[in-house]
Image 1: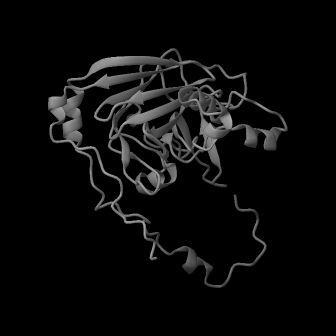
Image 2: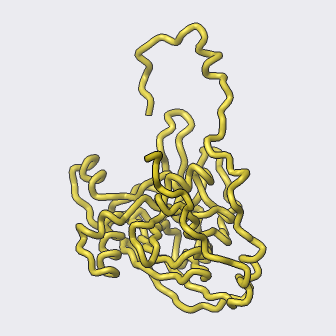
Image 3: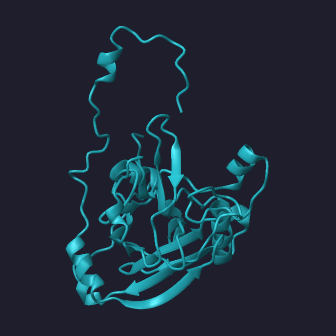
Length: 286
């Protein structure tokens, strides 16, 4: 947030500010997912597993490459914080910052979740989003953001002086520790910036501060992903509920989230190949 300026504007300030922006990462050459193939595969899926994430808790789940998974609103409006890892290598994880740079602040159908360096490949592709109608509202808010990090006990302590352990960061740590046998200290280094599923967020138009507002999600809404590699997912049902008021507290109404794993007929993906890691040799000029 920029405070009141301490220096006078130069005479050519209007000209400097009028310079047109340039997109940092033009995506014209970005390999596109075959959405028609995914659509055909979706028509053949069979439900293989259902998990329920309880309010103010988190669960992990595994998704074989070539499968679909859905995150579903069930009993009431609820947002979730999603982490993704390579199921065989926790050091390859979702890279929200690079995903944001490539696809924008909020994700929807056709966007991909990219993995961290040195892998830099699609981990999952969004294949269906029942909230795609929302777009951006008059405040600049949209759904499914990659700009927020996740509610955590460190920021909570900094701003309130109190400790709260049911925040999404802590929830994801406990879930990953239970899944892997790691200690909470070991698991914490693998918990990373999230996709804020169903969360409605943006930046205020005046001060450009990160804001949240009540999510438009309703029971029956879902977001669906295609697993490009073998995935380990972690999902926290945020203690903020629909995040219309506050998070990191026990006062907001909270509801479960459901995760479904769907397996398509392998024949419908005959031409699909799991993406390889980045071919960059890693020499860095040495």
